[in-house]
Length: 481
Image (cartoon, rainbow, N blue to C red; front, top):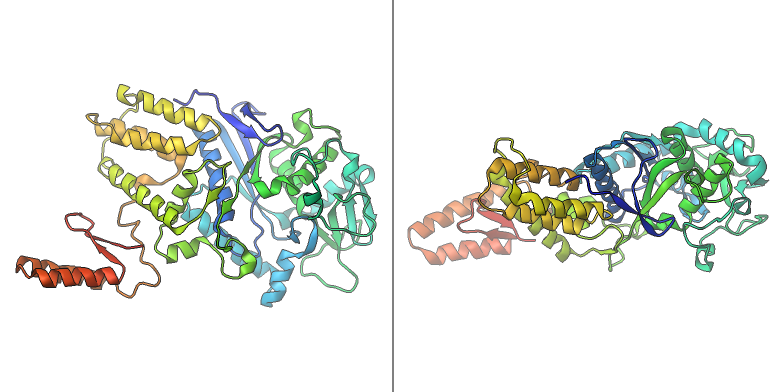
C-alpha cells in the first residue's frame, strides 16, 4: 500500500512534484511555528494539523523524519511586512509582565493545543532566542554583499539576489503596501535582518551586535534555525499561505545569500527543495483576528462542548490547499462523523493483532494510499477509512490492522477514544452529569409504572437544559450542541 509515489504541491514551481529526499531514507521538514505573544486561534492551528499529517505520511512511507517547529519569542512585528512594534514587547508592556513570562505562558498554551489535537511532537521545538549568536554570525556572513545599514538597523537589499519574490509570484502593489516604508531603504521590499534599539527606548530583549544593540528580524530567525538544525538544502518547508507573500520570500533571499548563489534553479538556492502552504480557515463573523479581543481559540470550542479532535476532523475533511470555512454547524457535523467512526472502531479495540492483507481490503487500501500520495488528499482518505470499517465478514484482527494503519496517518486517535470521551460538558450547562443520571433513573421508573406523562416531562425538561435522551442507546444521553 505504501509504494505509491508521494507527490506534493511545491509552491515554488506551482506544480505537483514527486518527493525525492535530499538524504536517502530521510525526510527533513521545517515548519514555521507560532509567535508566542497570545493564544493561537484555530486558524493558526490548522497549519500544525497539516504539518502533522505531512509528517505522519512521510513516516508511514518509511522515511526517518526530522521535523523542526520553531517558537518565535522575539523579532516578529505587529505587521508581517516589517512594520509596527515587536509583538512580544507590545504584549509584555500591555500586561506589565516580563517578556520571558509572556513567552513561557503562551508557549505552554500552544503546546496544550498541540496535544489536544493529537499533533505529534517534533524532533525539536527550536526557540528563537536560543540562536541569537548564530543569527549574528549568519548576518555577518552576508552583510558585505547583500546588506546595508541605516539608523534603524541592518537591511537586506533584495536586488542582490535573483528572482526575489518568485515564491509569491511577484511583489505586487498590494504586497508592497504591507511593507514598512523606512527612510533610506533602497527598494520597497528590502527588509530588516537586525533592528537597532532606538536611542530613546528600552527593550526587554536586546543583544549587542556589530550594528548596535538590538534584536534580530523575524525572517532571519527561520533561515538560521533551518540551516543550523537541518542543513541546506533540506526537504520541505511548511507554513500558512500568508507566509508565502513576504516571510518566506525573505527567508529564501537570505538563504540564497548564505549559499552564495543567485537564482532558484537548484535546490540549495531556496534552502528547502519543496515549499508547502496550507490555505486559510475562513470565519465570517470576524472572530479569527486576535485584535478583536475574544477570538476563536481551541479552548472556546471545548467550552462549547466540542471535543478538540472534532476540529481535527473538520480540517481533514478539506484539502489543506483549499479554503476551509468554519461554522458551528460544520464543527457539529464533524463531531457527529467522528462519533460514528469511534462507534465502529469500538468492537475492534480488543481484537487480536492481525494482518491487513485480507483481499477484501485491497482496493480500499489502494484508494487510501493513492489519496495520501496525491498531495495529502485527506477527504478521500477519510472515505476510504469509513469504507474499510463497513467491510463485512472479515476477521476483526485484519480490520483492526487496516484501520490502525490509516489512523496512524490521519492522527484521529481512534483506538484511544470512546463515545463518552467525545461527550464534553459545555461550559454554560446548568445541570451536572450526576443530576442527569438521577433524572434518567426517575424517568426509567416512570416508564416502568407506565406513567408516560412524567416520562415525557422529564425528557422535555432535560432537552431544555441541553441534554438529548437517547433511548435504546448504550450511551444513554448526550449534550445537545
